[in-house]
Length: 122
Image (tube, rainbow, N blue to C red; front, top):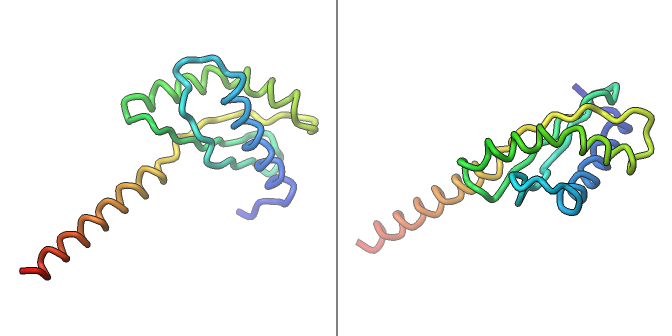
């Protein structure tokens, strides 16, 4: 599905503003070291899927997701004060595992290169 230019601009603005709100205003101790990696907004601007990642481990991911879900109303209200659009989308938070997957693949590649270097010296 192709995203309209307006939906893309709104998504970009939501990503910037949410990153700032999470850093400066949200006081929930569960939500820390969170990075907003992307935002998808529906064509009618009624729903926004917020992708996030964290430097904390898998154990903390559930707590972070719960904290973000609990704070969704606060975050939506804070966005309403910052964005110049009529209706603020409903926020849904989804963990983005692409960063962790990229790190895992990079380690596997480094390991394979190191092992191939060891095999060449034999």
